[in-house]
Length: 208
Image (cartoon, rainbow, N blue to C red; front, top):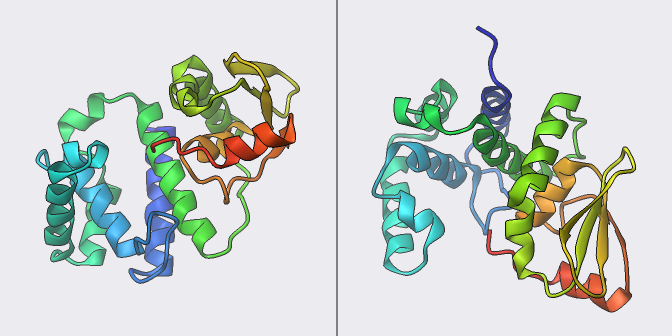
């Protein structure tokens, strides 16, 4: 059976984590590759850790403890478990969710090592663009005070948020997804719009 695009991205991330090793840095808030592997492991396999991935306070502290406990399994064991795929109940989650999660974290590892953006195939770019335009991008853009639109390499423009002082993000969907996930310094995009609005957008916390 042909692997889904989410599964292919998962495997690619595991290959990269294995290659760089547990102590390699990532773009995730000071996490090493080992800590990122623990995050990915508990995300799918530890129901007590889930709320703390999204919520602060005691939930986040519990998740940190569960991640620390997961690290006792060892880096290679965590990567092998992630590579095997999610438990059965996670397999009902739309594949685009897996693609976005693993694409963003794959780039967290790659770009922290100084790697350039990799060319994605048309299928993955199309799925990321659809995810962004069907609601996810609009959800994250609520943090923006003015208008926000995107212009993709094929020349099409799409509004994520209507408003004054519109800023246009110009680039492939994959780079826009990274930007909306808070990887603003790593995303390779062009910005069009009033200078003050561009500066405000680049300073926006999207909460992801």
